[in-house]
Length: 330
Image 1: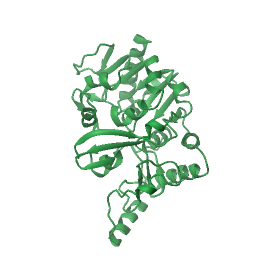
Image 2: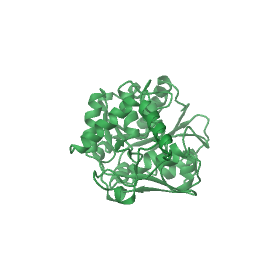
Image 3: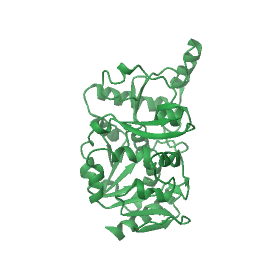
Image 4: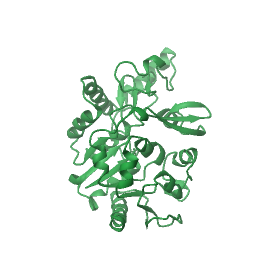
């Protein structure tokens, strides 16, 4: 049995080749939910959705989010209405008293849908309507995710990291922002001062998560701070990982992140913004898989390979390197 910790892009890319070493029936994926938002009354779980769409064979692999070939008529219409009505088209938080009112799914992550600053496809939106309706019917996020995973025909076990609300908040020189506001609306341009995982102190791992982390764990090349970091703040997670076999795949080529703001975020939490910073981000890791051109040094076993993933064949190559690392330390 093997468990992958996943954000929205890096680990899903690795999962494209996971079957080269790991049976899907014996694979569990724990997905980050710190990026979740409520947008226009709909509960959006971007990292979970990427895994749903990937497993269902409908993921847009150009963007690594959303559904391939999806239309965006509702999103465009919302922008048109906002423009015609003189409404702002950027992120508009609902008032403080509404941030946690009603469904217990918000924690400084509840946005108005006017102008819809995140592009939501029409088929994608159907998933959010279904998820939100299931939550309104009384299901937990884990239970709703299980229903959706069945609908998309997933062969792996997919678990959200928590059923409780956790918000990845970025403190910047332009003020406090939810990660989606920082990354989508502001394109990661504000200077990051620090990162907060609001709600994590009152949250618990979702059912099955701790048990899954007792198996061999693979941390894919996702953002160590905002993709994996929220999981590590949950009670019992870091302690369990310290007792498990853990292999981490670098999201860096030396000082350069594959994608996203990983470098800026690592620096903001006092970790070197490069491959060597993984020793700080993942002190419990037993081995690392890094690029064959990377001269990073660790006091733990390190496997080198070409870690760039642009195809399933690339993913299979990196997966085999992960398997080699596991064999060394297991």
